Length: 85
Image (cartoon, rainbow, N blue to C red; front, top):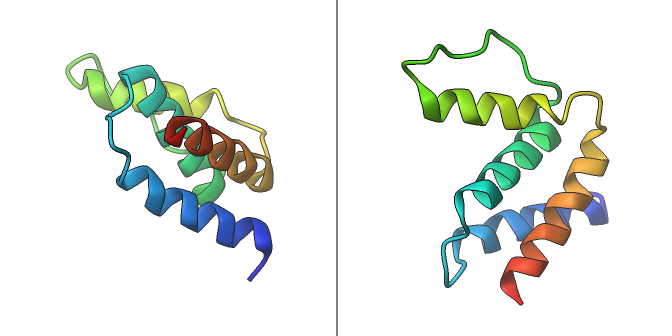
């Protein structure tokens, strides 16, 4: 397993144990980076207006389109480290 992948997995576990829940925008950023790192570009259709949470998640992930999984992993690790500080 690559060093980056192990750092990413550690950061993902650490994100679940943060002492304080991040604000909604930060949570969306974490979600989008995680999804881009693990699943690549967003697929499927954008949820409708009756699903505002799903729509926000989709939009956040869509902003990551074209970014490499390695880039997303690095950014996720950096963000979790900032949140732990």
